[in-house]
Length: 447
Image (cartoon, rainbow, N blue to C red; front, side, top):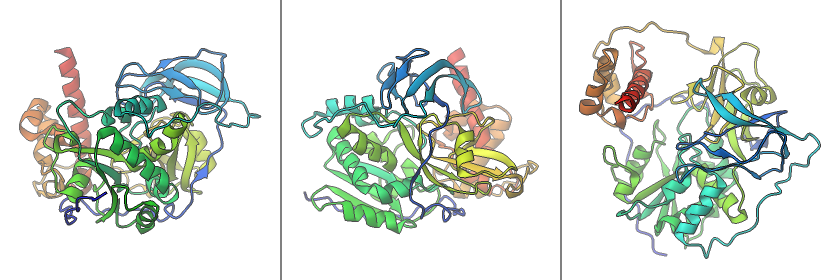
C-alpha cells in the first residue's frame, strides 16, 4: 500500500523539560504481580455510565468471566480478574476520595488462574460496526489514563471521515514506563491493534508517535512492522507534554484540533499504544480486559518496575509486593504532573491507572507558601495551548468561573501542569482550574 508521506516532524515549542526519572524502570522487563487476597473491582472505572452487576454474593466465577454488563453505549462491561468467589457488592474507596460501588472478589489460592472464558473470532470478516460491538465486549478503555471507552472512539461520528489513525506512544510523564515496555515487549500486539482500529474507522494509514528517548521501542515497532501494513513509526522530540493528544497531532501531522473539537474534526482517530495492544491481544480471542501493566516507582519504592497486575488490586498490596519504605508520605496514581494523590491505600487499581508512585517525606520539597502573582508571564510562555493561566488563576480566586469559560477558554485546558510547574509564586493553578470546571458542572446541573 502506498502511504502518503509524513510531513517533516515539527517541534513542540511550548511545554517544559522535566527530569524524567525513567532510568530505574525503563530497562526492566514486565513482571507479573501475585494475586492479592481480595480484589476490588469498581463498577465505574471508565467515562460514562457504571456497569451493572451480573453476579451476586457467594457466586463462584472463573477468570475472564463477565461479572458486570455495560449500561448503554457509553459504558463497558467488567470481567473477573481471577477465579474465585464473589464476597459482596459494596461501597469502596475511590481515587477521587469518594465511595463507589464495587464487586469484591476473593481469589481461590489453589486455582491455576487460567483464563477459562473466551473463544476465537474472525476479525478479518467483521464489519466496522461488528468490530465496535466486539471491542465494547472486551471492556477496553483508554489505558493512557483517560479511561474513555475505546469502542466509542472507534465509531466514526456521522458526517465525519477518518484518514489517519494516530497511535500515541510518547508517555512523557516522569517515572512512567509501562507504555515503553509494552512497545518493546509486545510490538506485534500494538501493530495488530492499530490495524484493527484502521479497519474500524476506515482509515488507510496509521502513524505511531514515540518520543526519541525510547529508541528501543522505536526499533522494536519498526522490526515488527511490514512494508504493506499502512503503518509508519515516527520518533518525535522528547518534551513534556508531547503525549497530549493535541500536541502529538500537531507535531506529527501539522493538524490542529479546533477549540472544543475532537480529532475526528480533522480526520483523525487517536489511541494510546497500550490500549491498542490490548485490543490486538484480546479481540481475536474474544476475551475481556482483566489486567494491565502498571509502573510502580518513586523514591520510596525499593523494587521499582513495570508489573502486570489484576484489575482490582489494592494499592497497599501492590506497594507491599514492590517493596515500600516505612516513611511513605504520599502515593500518587499516574504521573507526578497530572496524577492525583490518594487518601487511602485501599483504593484499587483500575483500568486507567498507568502508575503508582510512592514518595517519602524526605523526597518531597514540602509545602510552599502561595504568593501573589508577579505577572512574570512564565505560565503563558509554557502553556502548550497558548492560554493565559495567570489571568485564569486570578479569576478563579474570585470565583468568576463563567468568565474563565467564556473569555479564556477554560475547557481547552487539559491540566498538563506546566503552568504550576514553572510558577515562582507556587500558585496551584491546575487545582484552581479543576475546581472551576467542577463548579461550572455543578451549576449546570442545578440550572
